[in-house]
Image (cartoon, rainbow, N blue to C red; front, top):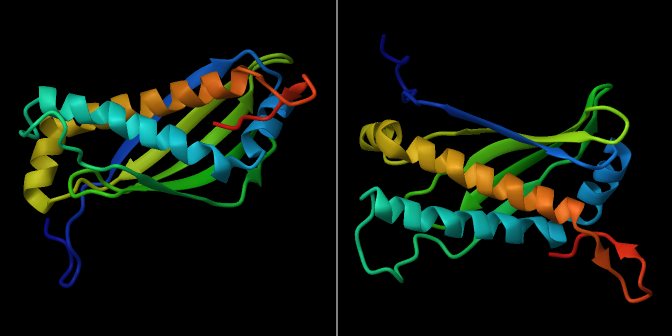
Length: 176
């Protein structure tokens, strides 16, 4: 079936990954929502850097080892939404490059008991480069996208669970 005239066919891809935090949900929410625009983009940058060697190893990109597809990710955060069972933080990240797509996602924190929290990411992206990009996505890019999201969420979980000392010696919020 063809798309209606004037609309292009897209192959929306979905991603989900989650980890468990050894933190009560209210504490995890406080940590996540404490100035996330100051430290969350660096985690996305690091996750994208993790993807570059995977792209080279799968043969998707060819070039010198120092060739960078992107050096930076622009992260946009929406307003957090509190549901009865979870907190959702809308997020969009846009890699500055030609091969990696924009990701529309939600970070979620949900209770897993009194001292545990599930941290999850649900994301969607459209493979770049039209029909060729959809084929490459099916062959390998989707797995690289999954590995990138896993890397990002693992880094986020580590950041939330590792207290950062403040100047007075007390625990402080994440500052990475």
